[in-house]
Length: 196
Image 1 (cartoon, rainbow, N blue to C red):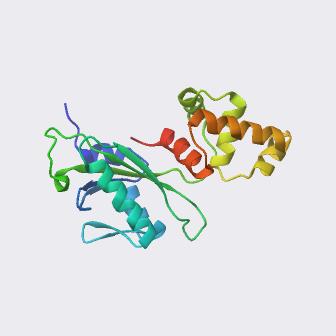
Image 2: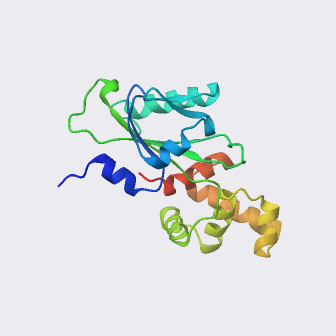
């Protein structure tokens, strides 16, 4: 039995959008409609998804092209600029499975989820993070603080450890997640939280 996209989409609290390869919006759940008001430089206009900031638009175009091409990456995460209240989010794009793997990219479907406002991880997310990357409990805790936007100095203060210890954990986290930059680390952690 197949459930309609609308039934599944409304059951998900994460903003979810289904696009065709040309940015035509085929479906957006109610959470997505609330967010597509220009916040984060995303707007729904005439059943099309508009990205109103040029740098983000070029990254979005590249990501969309990457996941709609055959044999390419199936998901991409893009950090979004802060909204007026200073909250940050990640835009997760994933290619939707199709019954006929059409060569025409305009026929490909793309799921978009807007998730992961900077906040601390929930216990089940911490467990998934530890399992995915083989992090120790301390490393997962430090990674969660990084994701919530805390500085190494703030993390050391909150954990009651030295700054050198926190930096050691961050070095180990980078090694285990195969990242070099903090931005890449955050995107790797966000990928674990992706709805796809």
